[in-house]
Image (cartoon, rainbow, N blue to C red; front, side, top):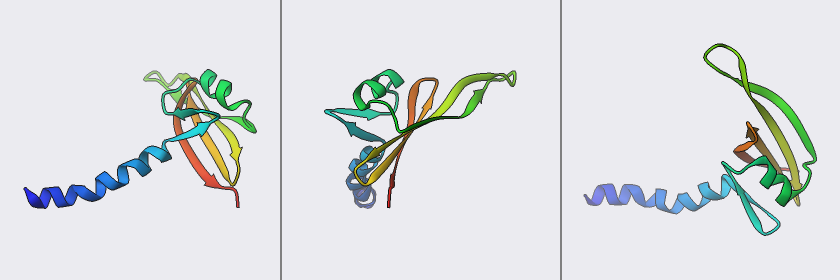
Length: 97
């Protein structure tokens, strides 16, 4: 039992960092996976760039949902938000330097 406890301790300390990587702050709001594109644009404004990068494909090989990448520049960080069907799917932060 104690071995399991000591194995789980590092994950408890890493959990807050994982949460920070899947969200970011715009004005006084936090944007995270599942938020609508309307909420992102309302809270963060127009992105620096907005690009269609693909589509989801259904069982019949038909295009279903648009996949877009929205880019925001924040201080020394470039934030890339992947939208699938007008919902935030993934948030990635990159250094601008």
